[in-house]
Amino acid sequence: MKITVWNEFRHELENPDVKDIYPNGIHSKIKEFLNEEDSFDIQTATLDEPEHGLTDEVLKETDVLIWWGHKAHEEVADEIVEKVKARVLDGMGLIVLHSAHFSKIFKQLMGTTCDLKWREAAEKERLWVVDPSHPITKGIGEYIELQEEEMYGEHFDIPVPDELIFISWFKGGEVFRSGATFKRGKGKVFYFRPGHETYPTYHNEEVQRVIKNGVKWAAPEETPISKYGNAKPLEEL
Image (cartoon, rainbow, N blue to C red; front, top):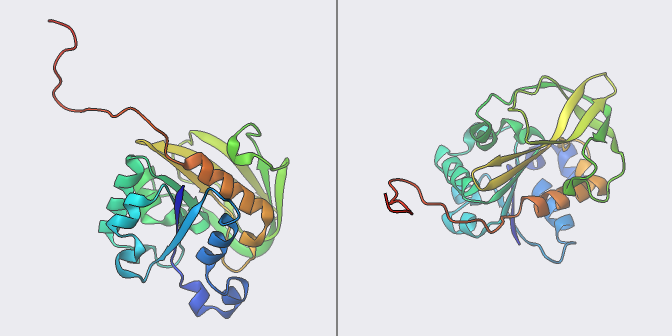
């Protein structure tokens, strides 16, 4: 399975606190723990590369694309967004992490503002598993507890998910739909909330497990080739 991990790679270069946590970038940390799976072939791409690292060749070969973005959503070229969208509709899996809820690609696929409440106050987050039979929760207990995270709170302006997997509770009292799946065309989309850049969330082994499971779930499947447009009758009219 070929996986591309995409990251803005801006906070790590501009904020010493973030660099301390992710010295080689969030994308490199995600690649590092994904490399623990023998069936994964992982490459990375970042915003400031030509075509944001998402050339036609890269997208064509990618089975699952992981997307992390925060401060530079508007710098992503619309042309690239359209190409990514086309690949999702054609079967490529998409994992959308944390603040990428505001990415152009996620908003395009959801058709809503994807807005929410937020607060950065190093709060405890408890992600409750609400679908323990789902393959994305394999190897996870009743909940994942993170001692410090950014708060996201409802209402989260997304369509009703096909599947709701995690609901978060925060120390300040808010709750949030933190793990949700959607099907778009032939592709699968998994939104997973935790991952603020100033906290070591992607060092957490349970968070890593969820992302690994999510990649396996989102992988393309063999589906019948659909034909559209004017059609000849199968039976004699």
